[in-house]
Length: 289
Image 1 (tube, one colour):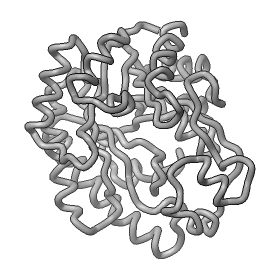
Image 2 (cartoon, helix red, strand yellow):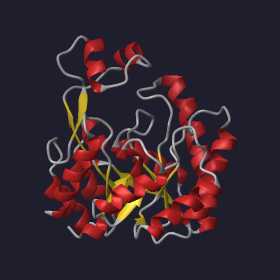
Image 3 (tube, one colour):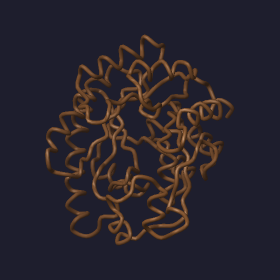
């Protein structure tokens, strides 16, 4: 793979300033980065100007901006939508004018709760997609993250109901795999609407019921915590360094290529004892494909 297509999700590079994160990415010899505000920091225009200036100074292209919010919660929803609009306004200046987000909501919600949260999500995405169209930018929804849009099927439902060409897909093969779906099949079938992809690996072992998940909600921080709470030897799923999980990477990349995808593969490593080392190995793994 061309190293210019390989990128890093900057928050995964551990503690440090924006400047230090950019320098680490430059030193790892990648072509692009996906920056994000620090936790608790609103994505203001000043933050994005700083991040875009730093990326240019370090010779790194920005693959997409980040605005991970909860769009299924009506509380303070207008503020979160305004944050997304700020991101979309800055994304228009990128070669790849994309803002990546997640749906939010309650994973495995059922009945009236799911119907209520889904309605709020769809209406929020309609509003943000209208702004994206005006800004000539795109929202890339990422299935996963423990929210309403966790599966390929729920992603397709959302796109159909919003009905905007400015709502596309950030395909994360680990999230798809850890939900029990086939990442290669997802790449093959959804390739035409993929506008960004993460490079993350994972494995799926067993499916939780809504009752099981409700019983551990808010009580775990790691996959290992989940296993303990569920009184199982293994968690229902787990994340692994690139090439060590269940994702068939050659088939995954080939399926996206066949679908016409020419964009970046941005490495994301959220767990592990040494994520930075895992990221360095992932760069070389992708470069060898």
